[in-house]
Length: 120
Image (tube, rainbow, N blue to C red):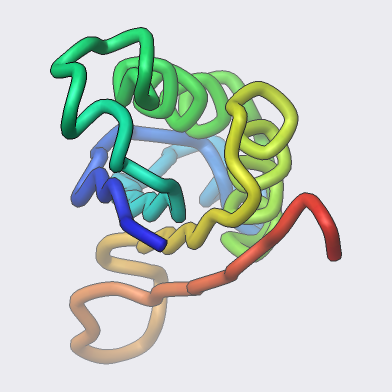
């Protein structure tokens, strides 16, 4: 199986466990890996034969910008489920990073990675 990857999709969102996190907001980054067979589009060179990555970008944007979740695990799950529902693929890997999370120390980000399938 081949992969199409979108890396470091970045948006500002209002997610977090505390009310202040949801009020102030934070920067989030998302990576999406789609498990697909790219044989046909590799031969036809036609967008209609593959996944239009703009659709994936728009799903991620919608979840990060319009949603409000307490946990990054929930953000990742929402993105994965929307992709599986709206895009003709069987498997997806989603990573969500919350940059500069509110901890009492130095930490670049916290990250969750999930893998979901239509058949599981």
